Length: 242
Ligand SMILES: C[S@@+](CC[C@H](N)C(=O)[O-])C[C@H]1O[C@@H](n2cnc3c(N)ncnc32)[C@H](O)[C@@H]1O
Image (spheres, rainbow, N blue to C red):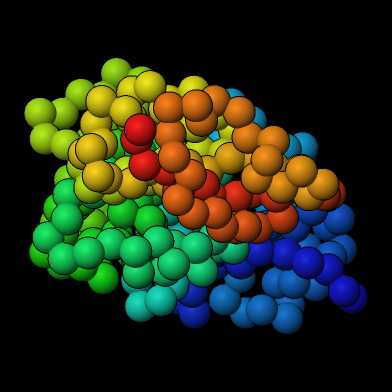
């Protein structure tokens, strides 16, 4: 059987997520991978504000899992919160960008993986993580404790309404399907010499050139992150305010 699937979790327990709803394939995955407690099938694309897949249980018993990545632990239930194990390289890349004692804002923080990866790498940085999905906020708070990254504050808020007296050296915006619309909010939050990391989607033919709404920003970096759809990439564009 050659079937691509994501595993979220660790040796103590994991769930696998496959494309489609093949129950025979799901059972085979459970037989081969003893740590996999449940197999879900993706029914359609990620949907809604919380960016969740509709997941159909194909085999086993669903449960919360603790995902292990780069020495970090992320507890979560993939039915309730966004999480992609494929983004681990990008998380580490982002963590490398941050300097000592910087003030960092992670909007659209989910269960906290990016904020925690940054906070672990730079323990003297102050990281604020903003998320709207209450289930994700709960996991992010638990994950901060699990990883002993007490330099992360998790706030349940709508990024569109987020206000702060302090300005930030770096702001991460990992919401490819709409982060551009939040740039006016972010403009008020970033320091004059700060950097904003915007995630968005870009077609292979016009890579990086087809991103609109960046008129009052200077592009200072570009990163292809992951394939998103046929000939469409999830990309990161690094911006300084003008
Ligand atoms: C693509 S996911 C990224 C999550 C996380 N950064 C990660 O990498 O696992 C985007 C997240 O933004 C959250 N979100 C969407 N709109 C939001 C808003 N207006 N304010 C705050 N969070 C929002 C969703 O609930 C979701 O958890």
